[in-house]
Length: 310
Image 1 (cartoon, one colour):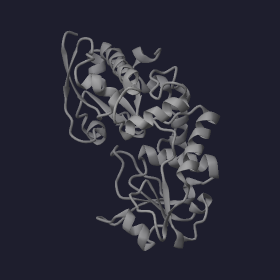
Image 2 (cartoon, one colour):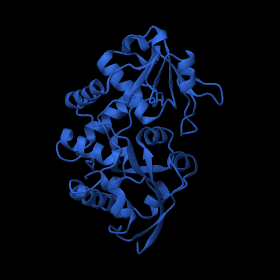
Image 3 (cartoon, rainbow, N blue to C red):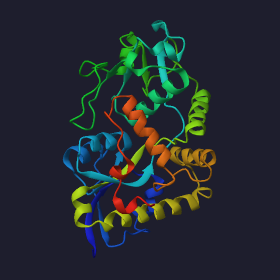
């Protein structure tokens, strides 16, 4: 596999800097960056890249429809904190359980942060997602996916933030609403932090935001690519973590890494199957409960075979 050219699309996360700038190389591979915004939809609909960073929910949904991509156990964009929920005080909502029977806006039903939030609402407050009408503005990245019957689309061109102010929806997850007047946070930031940490402590599930996926055709022709990419991503992450405490001018992502490092026990980006099996299986259960996939998918079907012992 000498100098195999592979196209790649990844986000500008600090833990990938060494890979992007060439300080870390991939054994036998020459990476060609193809950054064109979010790689999620192009990867699962067009197989637009050889390697791409994909939202974990999108990836699991894609595997349920046998889209020919397979992950390596490289995970990023992880956070314990629950995504903000805002509500209109005129809706009659006073507590999270009151979301049942209401109209709640979010960008898309299968967005990973939204999925994590619904899981925590169910875990901590007993909110039944089937009893909520979810109002969305975007379809799923995976074109074959069909939303549950309690999902409806906002009028084309509508703003969920404007709909919340007008009372056309009662609440929203991960909206860009300004807090004030009728629009308030349903759960404080402090409480959301506590809920996320408690969920991790009780279940061992450290929510996964993104995963690295490779086209099956590449893995079939060059199975060694999976493990080579795995080692390169781990090396890049290790370089980032070694310099984090001395870094000047921490970004929001850097501060998130520091917070999660302290909460998780030293490494905010654990890689490999052994360190993440509880999280993977817990997230998959969440997807089944929320009707994103119809049945659990085994770990050995989700990841490249030569990375399963990682």
